Amino acid sequence: MARWLDALLGRTRPRQPDLDALFSLPGAAVTLEAAASLRPTGKAGVCFKPASGRAFEQIGGELDELLAFAARESGSRLSTSDDTYGYRWIVVDDPDTEDVVTAAHMVNTTLKERGFGPQLLCSVFGFARPEGADPCHLVYLYKRGTFYPFAPRAGERRDNELELRVRGAVDDELPVEDDLTRWFPLWGAPV
Image (tube, rainbow, N blue to C red):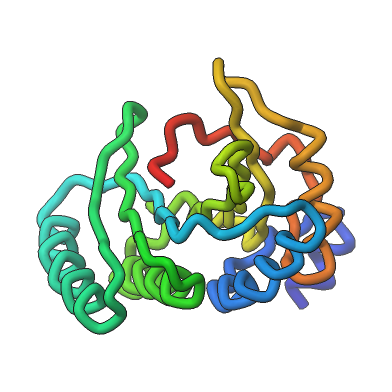
């Protein structure tokens, strides 16, 4: 009934996050290497807005314990950092792309299950050319359930041509954000 009423009134419901879409990244990484010579850097970051209050303090300690456990199990290095905009990043560093994706999924899921889904902003996965130049990140927008490419360059510029090539390359493998105005720049992301 609600869907029918929404259709009648011209309302659309936003796409819900599907964190399992993150597990499509290793396959997309193979495609990106073939189509754009981009390889995973072994780094990812989960970005969220830390909330104030006792509940978030409790999850902070629990999250630290969980991250330490994940680091021991996977061999990944995990760290946290805050950016100049007041967001907190949990950074995963591991040469194995599947371990990076699994750790990022675990962090997102833990925050969501503890009721902090509204604070989740995105997950960012690093890619670069073999010589280390021309990075391009795949950004997963938590609230939209979609990915988009972000290719930062010096001077807070971006390589729009590369972003569009990456979109074309992974469009069949990942849910790509159609609305280009939502392809937000993430200057200074620690990946």
